[in-house]
Image (cartoon, rainbow, N blue to C red; front, side, top):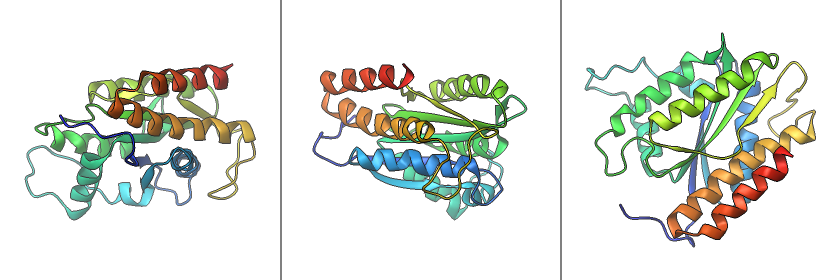
Length: 212
């Protein structure tokens, strides 16, 4: 597998949202991708409207839609990802899970599934009960896809936190947490590509500071 050189800008793909336009989940994802951009990454966001247009993935179906091809090719080219899901009944939403199931098309790649890619994880929930459970579930899915979850994952209680616009949030701490997820995804992509242990440990230190 050819690894990227640290001087190349990493490409970070964001996947997440709900069927509701301008959902808190999609706005949280957008803020996280801004963190990735701060770390020098190029980004592409696949939001709720796009995910809602994806057909249910079936491995027996050989005729993929243009939208499925677009998602697959973007992830195939990605150096890292950020995935954001609402917590629905204690689990990842069907909308996001279907997008991740579509990545089964990467199984025969030189880098199968999410192999060699850092993946930031974000969960929004109306209350704290589902947040930790769903974050654990999302991390498990990333592991199953051979991805590397970033040390810091963000959970947002939308009962307490409002996203007024795509760029603003009622809680500055939440904004920093979301941007940390994006920065870590981009930084891990650079560290992994360059075998840079110093960059790796710098990301770990940032996670401990934010969590503290």
